[in-house]
Length: 326
Image: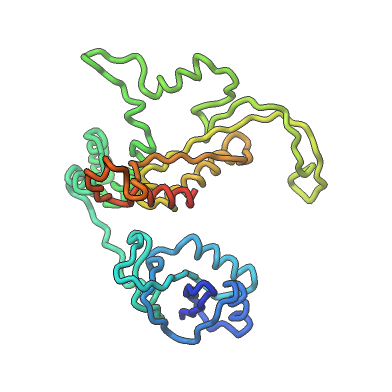
């Protein structure tokens, strides 16, 4: 069943449960939602803008975890919906939808999974789905299919295209370049690494771990004497290295600025923690490059050219939402 609460900000919070909640739990939820009012109805008239039913938001995941920590059992999803009075409201259709009303079928997903496809013509499927497989990769997959004695499935080919993508494998950067019939001595990646090779300076490690490391100063570390049991804290001097990491999240941030930038920041934190014996993330920077956003209607010479229609989001929207996400 789905319960509805109205927050002081006039938002509707929908709570999906697998059992009837006792009165004590309802009071806890009202407190948890900042003094929200419980709506004792099976449906709430809209229209509303809120997350798509197919996608559980990170906000919901955290909210459900909090309810478990305060002793409420049986809640499976919590989402927030904003009432709109606009005839054609602006929202991100990849993440959100418009709901005429919120009812007991709010989170019901009726669509069934698509059947597994066995691909006969891998080259044609590559072209159709835009997988960017090279001729060598297509030939490799065809050989795998012959070895297994069966056709490969759509998910197998799609998964292969992702893990062997340029983003993951840096194929172009590691490729041998032949220009005017002459093979170049170094690949692009070797040229990038050449700077560190010729001038290592304070570099401890580069291009071989989750992040790069530079020799750092002696620092005073305030930490437990032993980490495997409850222990007193002490202050001790220790040699340190400084980790450096750059995470490019261009396409994810283009498609969905907030979450694209947020997962980029998460990747940087993850790689610093996973580098060497483990590190402490202290600070980070975020850099955004977009087309000119034309704030306040644009400058005089820009008004002579009509603004283009953006495939995903206008530059100003990307700058604001990506900054919020990071």
